[in-house]
Image (tube, rainbow, N blue to C red):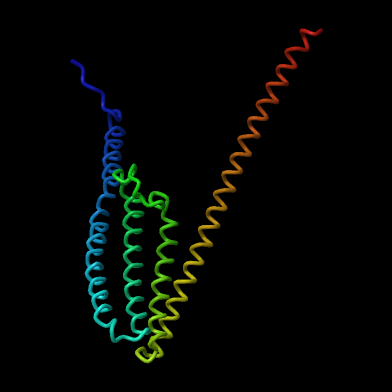
Length: 218
């Protein structure tokens, strides 16, 4: 009875290949360690739901005697929570699909968001910084509606942080544009090289065919 040969060969090389394969399998499956982080973010949404309900109840209780400015500030706080919740959803879906696994249950459903599966890591960075800028704008607007409630130095640093978010977003967008442009140029260069090789082969075939016809004509 013969033994089955080792799938990676025998000897030291075969054992090293087996060890390498085991390490690669472990590293690849290690991506599932990210799943608790996304579950934690999902649970964080429940906390935001509770905070939203509290803020909404507060808005209802002050509606009759509140001024337009107070009502606007309360609505801005609700909007702030909504933007943060949207940001969490984007990070959960995009992060899970980019780094863990495809969400197969959403593949054939009509409720699947249009951006789902299309946001790569670069797009996730842009959406993240865009959401942070929007949240920062809401915070600044709420402060400007009640400037007497905030210290001048605090307002200054809030503006500086907001500008930092804006500049970071612009830099991310520029870097992504340069990377996409370079990738497009590389693809165009490869396409041109392939077309050149095809033309050279066609020309070589024609020359060979012409040489083969010359003796026959003679």
